[in-house]
Image 1: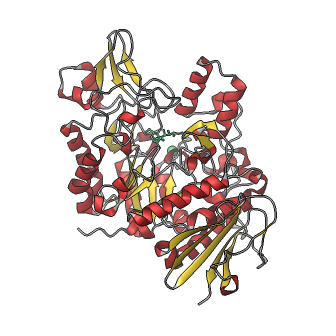
Image 2: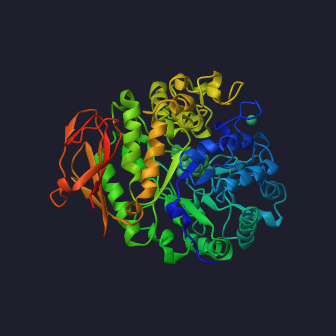
Image 3: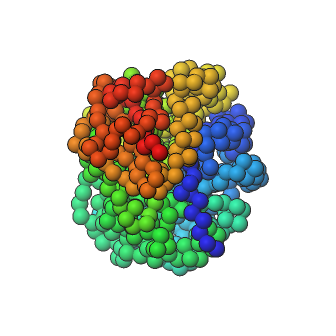
Length: 556
Ligand code: TEU
Ligand code: CA
């Protein structure tokens, strides 16, 4: 089948099902809940939904620990509900992207249970079981949530590898049986009509032969032995040829610590591996070394450099970018990418949207982002649910880091900030549920909710709709080149997108000051007209209001 590459024209809406909408009053979002909100999602201009994992799972990591890849978690409904969702989406011409978690399974998956209890079974080699070295783990690797990467099996001098929680054993992709299992699982969902997969930590699936010790580091010791590991490209090509390409399935691979040097090997079209990557470099401009807990202030200049690098990289190598500010692992964007913006919440939420989504690539929006939802004001540890947050807390305490410091960091960076219930209305529990939700609602739902924003022509929600309508009508956003202007300006981000018969200038004020700006010499300001502003009554002057962003188009 010829690849249609439909994703290049799509707007994708990401749903974290547990927190989206609860249809049966148990405090947990579910598939039926999503169905009732499809018209809302469609009204944003979304062409597709990426659904975070909804498979059967003991929920140690909210579904990223899968017990049965071919069934739906009871919390969310059942396979029939899923089929109804799929059908309702088809009726609205929306596509469905499922999460594919292939680096690890749940420890409650039958493969792992077999492997654990019957060491002679063939499932043993589906995972990495190794003997301890003297009284220590097989090597010095550390995991993504701060702990050691090896789990000791009680009463034995034996360990298994787990780069995430103890309930997420890593799977051995070198075993052809494992690859066949995953191909069968992907086919199962493709036969049910799935249009794409978001591939969880897909770039770490191939581990260095012999699992050697790694260079000691502050975070992720051992990572040079599995990030872009030795056979990752072989395995991806195998998936592509055997499963993905024949069905025109779109893929986006989550790629931790990805660089522009490595990325083209995954997503250049002629590589026939993945279609897009979720990269982290632009998310890491407010930390050191890609370690989110090592915080430093956001720098716009650093951010611009990263965006330019990735825009150029994908254009040169025939790849395609993913454009995102938020997802279920990141804190909310309002208040993160500029100081003082929380008091300009509406303005800065709109500004961020313009600054990001006129780049080349596929835009992703995460539930609640279109409302300008903010981080949760949780004060005590028991308000948090996320396994990473709890694990980092334990670890920091062991290292005698003061409590106030850890709580300060968690209040900025916990993944739970993105996981509080979607704010639908001013009703109790934000209209998400009629009973107490599994995680507390952000108390600002009285002010920030869908219903209120539907009735406010100046709301973030209405702006998102308007902006994406405009974006879709402009072919230059898809085809145009990218030029960064005034790269060293610390408060203004200006770039242009140009093709033969069209040209756009995007300008965004990342500060609370009123700022004068100018067009670069090579672009004649008098030939451009203002086609979008984040302020309802923009003055067409060379002066930007606080957190204002604008789009100009060359007159024809
Ligand atoms: O995330 C992988 C990943 O890189 C994150 O664990 C990241 O290090 C962390 O979120 C930073 O806060 C994926 C999923 O998106 C995440 O939700 C899962 O917990 C993880 O894989 C394990 O499946
Ligand atoms: Ca429910």
